[in-house]
Length: 193
Image 1 (tube, one colour):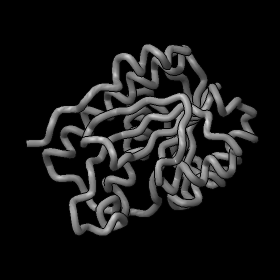
Image 2: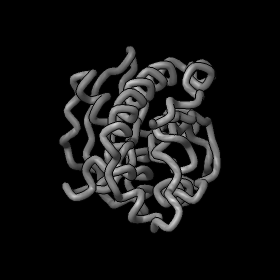
Image 3: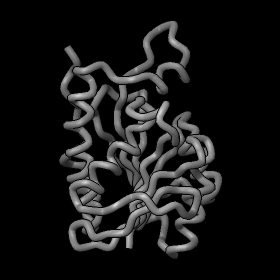
């Protein structure tokens, strides 16, 4: 069994923001695989299903970003998964161009508060993750304002395409092909014109 966690913030005001791209990917996975992600438990909205022949739990923590680790810890403990191989976390990354994916087996938080919280609660930084590039913060912008801001129409189109690629990458990771997923999808994204 795998737990696939998309990071974001609950409530309508944060919908479709850069910081909620993890939630967007979970929604896309849920839709493509007819999984309902509406059950409230483990401080998250969760749904159970099958993707690429594997049992999965899709989860959207409802703790707000910087407390995401509380929910992830509960999920890992309850479902008794090995976080180093059976947990996949999807989140936004401002150091990558809009739409660029970066798949990793482990790594530091890189300043991302949701990942900091997960590392703190799990006691390890070894877990597969998919970083979704949301573009660098423009000069003079407050970081919080930027990540809680919305994509332009063109950026949204690119992010929707990237979410499909993230979905394909997840399908590979689920059959123990993270190396192949990295080879295929750790590429530069199209530039926003």
